[in-house]
Structures are given as structure tokens and as C-alpha cells.
Image 1 (cartoon, rainbow, N blue to C red):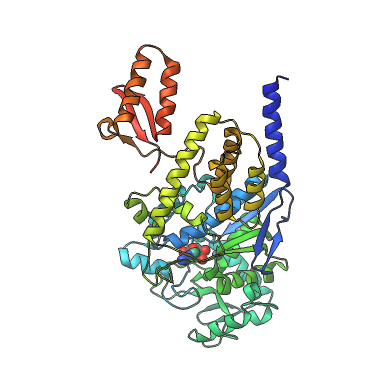
Image 2: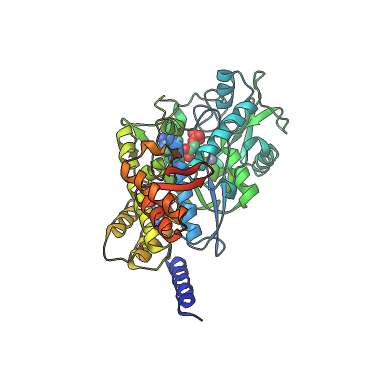
Amino acid sequence: MSSLSWLTSFTSRTKKSHERTTPIFFTNTLSGRKELFIPQRPGQALLYSCGPTVYGEQHLGNMRAMVFSDTIARVLLAGGYRVRRVINITDVGHLVGDGDEGDDKMAVGAKRERLSPEEIADRYTTIFLSDIQNLNLPTEEILFPHATDYIKEQIALAKTLEEKGFAYQLVDGLYFDTGKFPGYGKLGGVAESQQEAGARIAVVIGKHAPADFVLWRSAKPEDLQQWDSPWGRGNPGWHIECSAMSRALLGQEIDIHTGGEDHIAVHHNNEIAQSEAASGRTFVRYWMHNAFLNMAGEKISKSLGNVVCLSDVMKKGYHPLTVRYFFLQAHYRTPLSFSWDALAAASSALDRLWKLCVEIALESKRVSRPSEALDQFLVTIRDDLATPQALGILWETLKSEDYTEEQKWGLIEAADAHLGLSLISPPSRGSVDLRDVPSDVQELVARRSAARASHDFASADHLRAELEKAGYRVEDGPGGPVLSQTTH
Ligand code: AMP
Ligand code: ZN
């Protein structure tokens, strides 16, 4: 074996053993503590994330929940796990109040835009998928079940609950009887506040307890979405879709379930009650929740009307990954405050980081070596996704003189896999007119063209590298060199 191939295989073996052996810890909302991650089946992680209600454009708060769940998946993948991921698309049954009161969100969207609920769902699912792709979520590796495609499964689950004595029927629907499920409200220790919250909701005549919730809602004549069921025509309650779809796609017991912290009190406690009452088993081993994205001291939310979307960010000329970088600067369990100034700061930091990565790619020739910094990075990110500290290690190492370029590149590769910031191939900004770039850049382009014309390709390559360092990429088009900027 040549010394070079030995070194390459050594590096990859070392890298692998590091990646496999560092334990992963997550804070479990169920226990309120940080726990060692041990999946049901060795080497495989089943991950379900509550996704969007597709009646309007999702805001940056929703995007924080998506980047959070993607960071979990990336940490698991880099740790050697196979990850099966589901993000549900809610296209029926979600009322404005999150409980059993208020207008139906899909009907609100349909009325607003004079379209059918299906057309509304299609429109906003497309926008959602494009948004999360822009945030570097690998959509081709994720399952996106629509609630309306799982009506049969939701009815079957509600039927099981009724047969097992956990449900009762009223005129307006089939209800889950929380009094029959011992430990109801155990998630987040919200049993009592949950009861109080329930008591504030307009009382449905005949409900056994304020916290009881609808599994199947009887159709009102004006309901645009309705199906036949053993309880007459109607539509599913909101919570049952997640229980039914996670069961259909991931099985009765899953490893991780995520969502924003607003889902703890009602939605996730109700999911636990339905799933565990039906199966008699643990539903989820690790419950994980992200804190809110706020703006001017209030949660970003449609109902408060203080919404900023990824499209707004992109319209202002920011690269969408600026948002991802902005989120990763805070720990997922810490509330984060959005402002345009804070986003501008994140943008210039990410630009500088991308520029450093381009320089190191050239210096290291994309050869990676292990380092203490890499070990430290892995321990840190696997400690309940400590992304602010992980970013700190990355910055410190890339600016340090104590590491070789190859070690820095090794860290960049690992950071890219975990953080999804396109560090190994920073985006270009599209072509720029040669006349609009600084004169030293124009000169580098001219010298490179001259070198190519005289077949001095070594010099041409060197000049290309100089241009990359200056933040420009050059391609040779039919009409001469085409220049693009590599950072925002
Ligand atoms: P929804 O479409 O309202 O069901 O929300 C989709 C996901 O985004 C859920 O996991 C919510 O908990 C989460 N979410 C909603 N608003 C925010 C916010 N302001 N900050 C963080 N996460 C949020
Ligand atoms: Zn859900």
C-alpha cells in the first residue's frame, strides 16, 4: 500500500471511529432531563416532526422548528444511524384555536383566496417544500404524508379507541375520554394547567372533562372537507392525524418526536393519549421541542399578525442560509429574537465564513485530516445540539494558526454535515458584469485569459485560485470569461 493511500484510509477510519463512538445526548421533554440517546433498534432512528398546516405561507418561527428537526437528523446521520424521517402536512382538521374551538384553518385559507381546500393545500405545500429546500433540508430523504391521504387510518385508530373504551360519542363528534387514560398530561408536567386551559374553552355539552378532545368531528353542512365514517359524515380531529400517520409510516413506537414548545401542552399530550391507549405501548422515547422565535418580545405567529417569511428575507437579497445560520447561533431550547439587524449581522458572519472555507478548500486541496478541534466539535454538537458552541469551535479553529489547512478542511467537512450551511461549496451569487468588479479583480481575469491563450494552464489555475480567494468564480463561456461572486 502506498503511503498516500495508507494515509487516506487511516484518515477515513479515524474519522469513522470518532463519528461512531461519540455518544449523543438529547433533552427529553418527558423527563425534563438530558439523556443518552439509545434508539429502539441499534443503528436506526425513527424521527417524526409536526409539520405545517398548509393554509398559508409558513413563517420563520415554523422554519426554526424545521431547521431544529433537520439538525437532529444530521447529528444522527453523521453518528452512523440510518434515519427514517417524517414531516406531516396538515391539510384538514386543524382549528384556529389548536383545540376544538375556532374556525377550520383550511376553510379560512379557502375563503380568503376563493379556492378549494385542496388548491390551498397544494399551493402552500409547494411553497413550504421550496422554503425548506432553500434552508438545505434534503426533501428527497423525508416522507411528507398529507393528513387527507390517511383518513382511513385515522378512522381505524379512532375505532380502536372506541372499542377499547377510551372514546364516547356526542352529537358533534367522537371524543377521547382523558379520564380513562392514567397519566394524561404527563408531557411537560402540564396536567393541571392543561385542565385549566381546557376549562376556559367553551364547554361542549356532554363532555366528561374539559381536557377531552375530539377524535372525529361530525360534519356541519358548510364543511368543505368531509368523509363517511362509522360515526356519520365528518372530518378528523387535528391530533389524530399525527398518531395515525406516525403509526402507519414508522410503527407503533418511535424514537424521536419533535415540534415547537407550543405543542407540548395540548397537541403532544393528546397524541400520547391516543397512541398509547390504542397500542398499550410507549409511543415516543424522546420528545424534543424547540423554543419560540420571537419578534419585539412576542412569539411570531399568524394570529398575532407579526409574520416574517423566508420569501421576505430573500426579497431583501439575503441568502436563505443566512436564516439557518441565524437559528444555529442560538440553542434550540432558548427563545430567539428576530430582527432585521440581527439577520444582517448573521449574513455578514456567514459571508466571512464562506470566504474562509473557499480559501481553505484551495489551500488544503480538499484533503481532510482529523484534529482535536474535530473531536471537540463532535462532542459539542452531540451534547444536545450545542450549535452556538459548535460554531464557536469552527470559527476559532479556522482562524487559528495551530491547525494545518487539511485539519481545518476536516473540520469544515464535519461542520457542513452537521450544520447544513453549504460550507464545502459556498453558493455563488450569479454572474456579475466584468466592468462592475474592482480593478484588481479585472486584472486577475485578464491575466488568466492571457495565460490560457498561451496554454500556460498552471498559471491559469493559480489565477483562478486567486480569484476564488477574492470571492469570485470564473467560468469560460462561449463569449469569454463569466464571473460570479461566491458569497452574499
Ligand atoms: P403549525 O403550522 O402552526 O402547526 O406549526 C408548525 C410547527 O412550527 C410546529 O412545530 C410549531 O410548534 C412550530 N412553531 C410555530 N410558531 C413558532 C415560533 N414562533 N417559533 C418556533 N416554532 C414555532
Ligand atoms: Zn403533530
